Image (cartoon, rainbow, N blue to C red; front, side, top):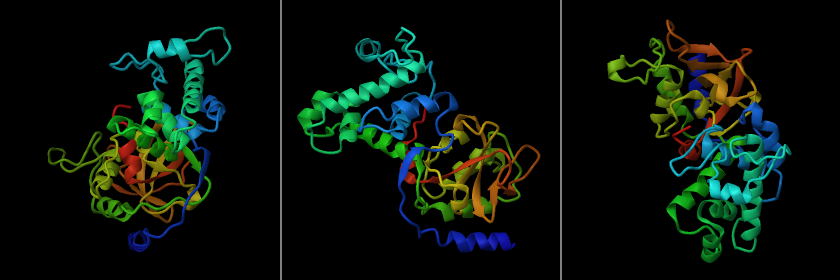
Length: 314
């Protein structure tokens, strides 16, 4: 009972907070197999950084090195074969330029970004925004428009990646609290004692039952924020506060591989005092659980823009 009361007290103060600054890559946000190469090539030129490059790759492929789009864009960086023929590089020095090999494709994406940045360097506005616009619409259109052109797809592409960049960046100071957090906690509290259901979204035909990510999705949906369905994508819905910076409403994540956010297998809503509300497993009910376990992965402070930026196909 004291815990519940404490949740309401702290949740009521969520509108207060401090600004944030970010550098580097957030813990585990980039799969371990690609973290070093993204960190290295993300510093190739001033127009990009590791977090921006990571956001771009996640947006393009969801880290899938074998994906093919309907437009025949291929691999982790989604190069069209014709563009690859001109701009693909041998990133790992093995004498081959392989569009399917992330060790070539990730450096090629960084190299192509930096080449585009040179093309648009004299265009007014933010050079990284203009670079991303050129990646989507072509450098000529950016130059002709004098900045990001008035093309909805291109404008959304730029906004999405710059928003996701915040999720892949490691905060260097306290990040702003979510204004929707208290409402999400209130929703989850009303579900305490509800039996777990794998794949449960809380619908009437499911008896109002949830699994872990179904609960967190429904909690934030109740306050107008639409999260992806699965936990490892929910991790990218905002910036990542450290353990000692957690606030009620933060999503907390758990994994057997603490180096890779794509391996996350469980999520809950932090309520303060080292506890979360979660739907733990079959045979259990929605309840309070401690977060300080060996499989604690990290946390996300959900933002509306961050959730909107997440691709729906990864």
